[in-house]
Amino acid sequence: MTQKVVISGYGWLAGYIGKALTGKVSIVGTTRSQQKRLALKEQGITAIEYALGDDTSALCNHLPNATLLLNIPPGRRNTDLASFTDNMLQLVDAAISANVAHIVFISTTSVYGDATNEVVTEVSTTQPQTASAKAHVTIEDYLLSKRGQVDISIVRLAGLVGPDRHPARSLSGRQLDAGNKRINLVHVHDIVPALTTIICNTPLNDTIHLCSLSHPKRGIYYVDAAKAMNIDAPHFSDTEAPPVGKVIDASKSWARLNITPLYGDPNRMF
Image 1: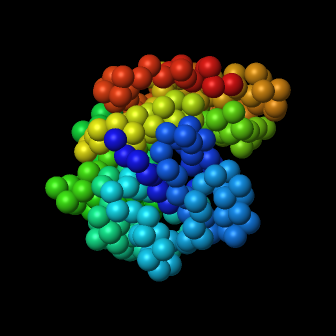
Image 2 (image 1 turned 135 degrees about the vertical axis):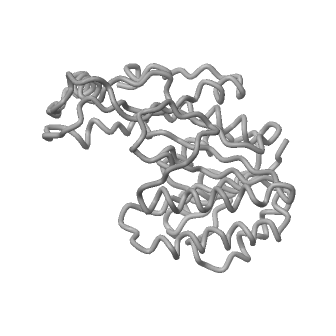
């Protein structure tokens, strides 16, 4: 069992994870902001100002025998994904040189692309289409090539939902197509116990999915969600057509973690 976790990228998701891990392990978090560093310090978290691409020396001082949670997304506005990818691989190398015990990489189910109508399992072939998804696959493959030197857990997350975050809000009132496309979402209150298990127990050395267990059409789901949240509903075309799009099957991953997701039905997320 790890005694220390270093969370590189202390953003929205890390806030939930850090709160759950407080009192269980020693926590170190990185942030690009001095203000955020001071706020984390007040929460009892050792905080380091670090941006991807910076010198890793201060970060690496905390990594011997620790678990490193890599939770640094490329950012929607980041157009230099080659630099992002190279910096992530360099951070991995630095961590391994510092004798990190376990690396947990937060990846995404977008690595499968949107071209398939199939059920996708943890061993399905990746088909990344976006620059971000391609970057994630490159980082995943590099990490998996390091197994034997360090324990590696790849965690592919579906679309994120939380008490303060739901994609229906960004879709409110919009005219959209592909109402028959299936949704793949996961609630932060299910992610937290999964990551806590992965960090605090025996490393998986594998790839897992975290996603809800049902996948309604988005033209039905987001309209119902908007009504439940008392916001303007989006308007979709093709909702009555047969369902299309990938289905992220996370059933084996949940079973492996011995977790029954509280939000296996995405209709419980609003």
